[in-house]
Image (cartoon, rainbow, N blue to C red; front, side, top):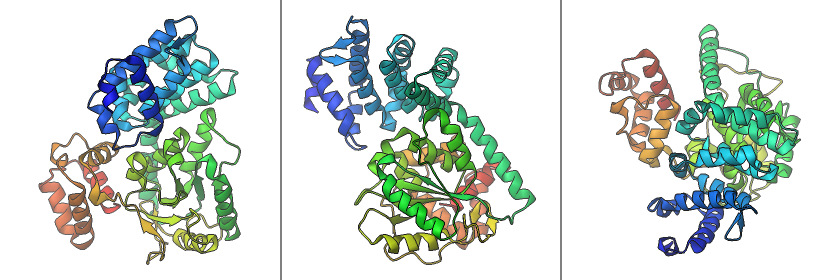
Length: 412
């Protein structure tokens, strides 16, 4: 990291592009200590753009933009890059670049759009939205797909809220419903062979399974959205590749926003999910399909864990979207994510509150992961104390906020 403090832009650029491909959540803190590195790479992209060959210090504009996308994989960087004007640089490339350059620029916008503040900024940018919609109609299949993906992430917030409201209305009318949805498998393409085995095993046990076999991406994300909405449970197949894949993140975060039951499957041996994936799968029981254990054993445990959810031959009582057919004892070789709720950082808690639209309550901002888990315990053991505490001490007097917070804590 010492080279980044030098004055040679060529060396800084090489180090930056290297870091973009290997950086993790912890190492990224060192980059954030000197955010001028983001200004450097943006200036390099602009220099390459003005160059007749679209190159700067040996790097093409496409390579530089791909490096920028790599840095944006870390959620802390997304706001900084937007604040430093990355979107204006990317819009220029999206309007005037080659197909490859435009595809790389849109992929970067898609990555930046996973930040909720950026979503609102982008949605209010009429020029950006017009460019993305135009590219979504492109005859270039790859360009159309990535544009569709970016548009879907930017514009779906309102759709998600509508889905939540519809879901609550249905539950008010009938709290006991037939669990007729399917099992959705959300996975990264490299793990397809194993997940096809899982799919066939589940189908053999009379489960309805939805799995994208035909590499559906981008402009077809609406089909994926409907698959999530109609699912009784979503299997999130964890690996480093899954975490870095934009389509996978779109699927998993949409399922989480709709409060769909999520069951994690571990596809990469010894992998410990962090960042957004660690947040979504925290405290959840996972099933290990990394090859460490016999497939039949783990698949049979998964069948027990699913219970009646997604089973075409049975039904299950549904309470607030969670079926009652849940395994009472944990499978012997299943485990819990090491990054559980009790270990949440202040940022994790704030992200959780933002997802619940409760960040406006100052009384909640000082809560820690351990305190949330204590409240979770109280909600089960002494519910009267729990509800009195969140209403009086945490000052949640609005009925909608009170309901959202209490349900979220109880489901931790």
